[in-house]
Length: 535
Image (cartoon, rainbow, N blue to C red; front, side, top):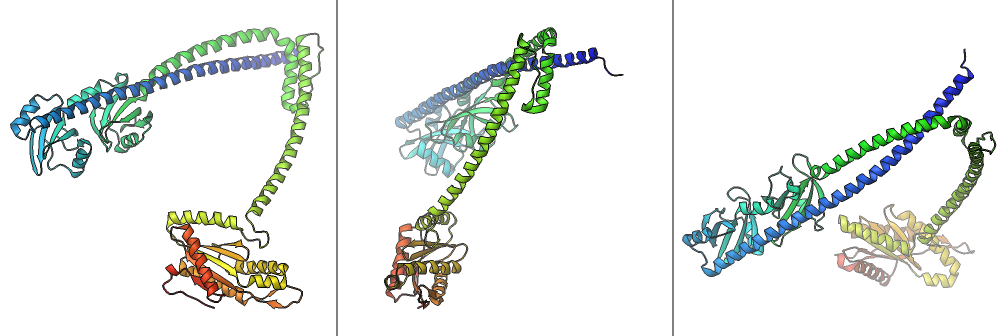
C-alpha cells in the first residue's frame, strides 16, 4: 500500500526540518570558522612577529657580545704587542695567566713559532694565515678540542696570535638563547660553527652557508640534520666572514598557538551544538507555512531559472516571499539572456580584435614591397642573435647585398620596373638562403642576411650561392617582354664581440666589392688571410 497523505506530509516536514537545520548549522559553522580563523590568524601573526623580534633580538645581543669580546681581545693583544712583544715563552705564559679572553698565545716569526696554552697547528694553513692578516681574525679548524677562533696583531716583525677561550664565547652565546630553548651559533666564512650557545643537532654546511650568504638578515626556515624545522636569522660581524646565527625550533614558537586553537575549536563545537538545537526547535514551529515554498524551491533547483511557484497571496510573510521568489526568477532569466547575448557579442569583438592585432603585428615587421622582413625586424633579430652568441660562443656572420646599377635601371625602365625587379630578386634570394638564415630588406636596393652558426668562410660560400643564383636568373620587367639580368655585390663579415664594428666590416666589404667591379663577394679584410673573389 502507498503512503497516506499524512505520512507524506510528515516525510516532507522531516525533510524540510533537516534542510533548514542543515542550513542554519552550516551558517553557524561558517561563522564560527571565520571568527576562529581570524582569531587564529591574528595569533599566528602576533606569534610570527614575536618570534622574529625574539630571534633578531637574540642575534643582535649575541652579536654585540661577540663583537665586544673580539674588539677587547684584540685590544688586549695589541697592548701586549706594544708593551713587550711577548717573544719568549715566559712572557707568553705571564701574559696568558692574566688574560681574560685567551687560553692560548703564540708568536709567529717566519718559520719559528713559540706557543703556550691552547696550541696552534703549525705551519698555519695559508688560507687561514691570509684571512688572519687581512682582517685580524680567523677560524682554526684543527685547534685542540675542535674549531677555534683566533686573533692576531703585528708585534714588530712577528705576529702575535691569541686563541679565544671557547667557554667564554659559548657563555656569551648561551646567555642570549631565544625563548630559553633555541641556540645561538658563531659561524666562520665556510658556514662551520666556531662556538655554540647550546649544542644542537648538526646542520649541513650548505644550510648554514646559504643562510649567511643572504644580506637581508631576514628570518628563514631551515632544517637540522634530524629533519626538525627551525626558524633562523643571521647577521654578519665586523670580523670579515664571521656571522652570528640565532635559531629556535618552530614547535617551540607554535605550541601556544596550537593550545589556543584547540580551546577555540572546542568552544566552536559547543556553540554549533547549541545553535543546531535552537534551529531544530524553531523550524519545527515555522515548518508548516513554508512547506509549499520549500517544495517550490526544490523544483526551482531542478528546473533552473524556469521555475514558477504558485503564489499563495500576499497577506502574510510566506506569500510575500513566494511573490518575491517568482519575481527574482523572472529577473534572473532576463539577466541570463542579456549576459549570454553580451558574451556572444564580446567574443565576436575579441576575435576581430585578435585578427586585427595579428595583421598589425605582421605588417609592422614586413617590408610592404618585397614581403621580406623589414629593417626593424632585422635589427631586433640581430640583437637576439648577438645575445645568443654571447651565451653559446657559436659563430655569427652577416651578408650585405647591393643591387648593381639599380639607379640606371630605374631611370631607364621606370620605378614600376625597379619595384618588380626588387620583388623578383627577393624571391630568388628566398630560394637560396637556408631555413636558419634571416633574409631582410635593409633599405632601398640593399638586402641583408644574418647567418647563424656560420663562420666567415661558410658565409662566403652562402654569398656566392646567392650571387650566382641572381646572376643566372633573367627577369621580364616591362611590356617589351625582353629579359633583363641583374647582379649584386656582396660584403661578408663575422661577428667578434662588437656590433658596431660588425656593421662597419660588412659595409666596407660591400664597398670593396663595388670597387672591385661589382657582381662579386668580398670578405672583411681583417678576417680574411687571402680575399676570395669571384666575378
